[in-house]
Length: 259
Length: 326
Ligand SMILES: Cc1cc2nc3c(=O)[nH]c(=O)nc-3n(C[C@H](O)[C@H](O)[C@H](O)COP(=O)(O)OP(=O)(O)OC[C@H]3O[C@@H](n4cnc5c(N)ncnc54)[C@H](O)[C@@H]3O)c2cc1C
Image 1 (cartoon, protein in one colour):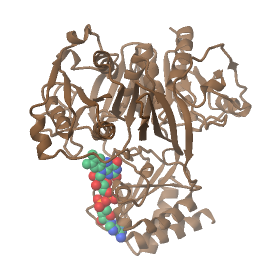
Image 2 (spheres, chains in turn green, cyan; image 1 turned 120 degrees about the vertical axis):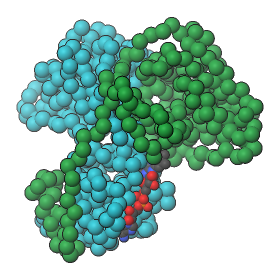
Image 3 (tube, helix red, strand yellow; image 1 turned 180 degrees about the vertical axis):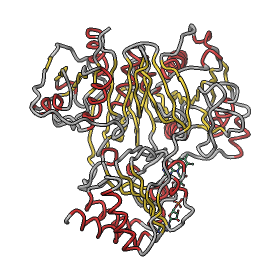
C-alpha cells in the first residue's frame, strides 16, 4: 500500500514572529522551522500502517522554498521511504486552493491508496487543504481522526472522527483522505540510524510545469498582517482569600457583566 | 451575481438549529442589508426550528431535506449545495466553525473554485470586496484576507460575532428547491457518545472553567466541576493536564486542542504558555488564579488572584452560589 503524507514546514510555536517589511508575510530571519505537529501525527500513522502490514511505501510531499528540504529530510529520518519537494516560486503566494491543486496533481502522478494529512498547519491554521485535495480528486475525506483500521485486503478503512459530543466511526473505500487529530498516536523521534539513512533517500524536485499546472492567481490573498491589539491591563485582586473571591464575583457581575 | 449572504445551518441532528446560528445570521444580515438567508441540509427540520431561524434574522430559508443528507458526508452535501449556488448565485456563504463545516465549507469552495477563509473573527466590506480578519501563528498575529471573486466562503468562530435580539413571531419564508443527492461512499458504522457530564460542550459554552498542572491530580478536577455546575460552565484543561492523563484529549484548550471564545474564561493552575493562549485568547473576560505572580497568564488576564487554587476555588464557588441564589 502506498501512502502519501503531505507535510508543511512552519515556525516553531515558541519563536517570536514579527510582521515583515511588506506587511503581508512574517519576517523569516532568525526563525526556527519545524514540521507542523499535526503532520507528525500523520507521518507516524502512515509508518505504523506500513509496519503493521509488513509492506508498503510512505511518501512525504511538501510545497515551499529550499528550506522545506529540511522538513522532508526529518520525515525521512522518521522512516518515510522517499519525498517529493514541489519547489517553484509560482506557489509563493499560494492559497489553500492552489496548494490543493498542486498536491492533487502529485496524487494523480503517484496514485496512492491513502493520504494522511495533519488536521491543520499551525502557522495559518486554515485546515482546508485536506478537504480540498479530496474534493478535487473526488475522494471521500474524514477530518479529525482519532483512530483508524484498514481491512486485511487493503480495500476499506474504518476511521473515528472527533465531533461535538463524541466520536463518529465511518467506513470508507480506499483511496481516501484522512486528517489527523492529536490523540491519534505519539510520534516517534528519529533514531541516529534513521538520520544517517535519510541522507541516502531520494527527494524528488518538481516544478509547476512537471505537474502540468499553468500559473494561476490565488483566490484568497493576504491584504495585511497585524500585531494583536493590546489587551487593557488587568487587575490583581489582593487580600484574604474570602474577600478576594467576593470582590472577584462582584467585579465579574457589575463591571465585566460576564455572569 | 446575487446579493444574498447564505448561512449554512448547523443543527443538533434532531431538527433544531444551534444557537450559534443567531450569530452567523446577524452578521450576514448586517453585511448584506438584511439579506441573510439560511441554507439547511438535513434529514428532518422541526417546524419550530424553522421559526427560530426566521426569528434570528433569516429572510428566507432554503430547506434541503432528505434522509440521504444524514449523517453529514461531504460527498453528499457538496454537490447538493453547489447546484443551488449555481442556480442562485449568492454573494457569500458563511457557517460557524464546527466539526462538519470545517470540512464542508473547504470542499464546497474547492468545488466552486473560490477562496475560503477559515475561523474568522471579523468581517468587513471594503468597497466591492469582503475583508476577513483571522488569527494566525498561534494567535500572535492577525491576518486580513480578501477574495478574488464571489461567492465569498468563510467560517466564523463561535461566540465572537454578536447575535442580535431575536424577532419573535417573524414567520419563516421557506423554499424547498428540488435536488438529488449523489451516492456517498462513506457509511457511518457507529457513533460513540461521550458520557454526558451534564455540563455544556466546551466550544459552545458561554463560561469555561479550566484547570492545569496546578491541580496536581485527576481527582482534584472535582472542585472545578462543582464550581462549573454552579455557574453552568464547561470544564477544560491545559495540555499538561491532558498529557498527564487527568482529562481526555477532547477537553484540551489550545493550539493542539480546542479553540474557545467564551464570555468568561477562568483558568486555575495554568501558567499561560503561548500554545494555551492560542486556544482561548479571544475570550471576552479572562480570569486567572495562580500562586506564581510571574505566571504569563496574568499578562492577558482581566482579573487575577495570586493564591492557592485549593483555597480560592471553594471560596469562589461559595460566592457564586450566593450571587446566583443556589
Ligand atoms: C507544539 C506544541 C503544542 C502545544 N499545544 C498546547 C495546547 O494545545 N494547549 C496547552 O495548554 N498547551 C499546549 N502546549 C504545551 C504548553 O507549552 C505548556 O507546556 C502547557 O500549556 C502547560 O500547562 P500548564 O499551564 O497546566 O502547566 P505548567 O506550565 O506546569 O503550569 C502550572 C501552573 O500552575 C501553578 N500552580 C501550581 N500549583 C498551584 C496551586 N496550588 N494554586 C495555584 N496555582 C498553582 C504554577 O504556578 C504554574 O504556573 C503545546 C506545546 C507545544 C510544543
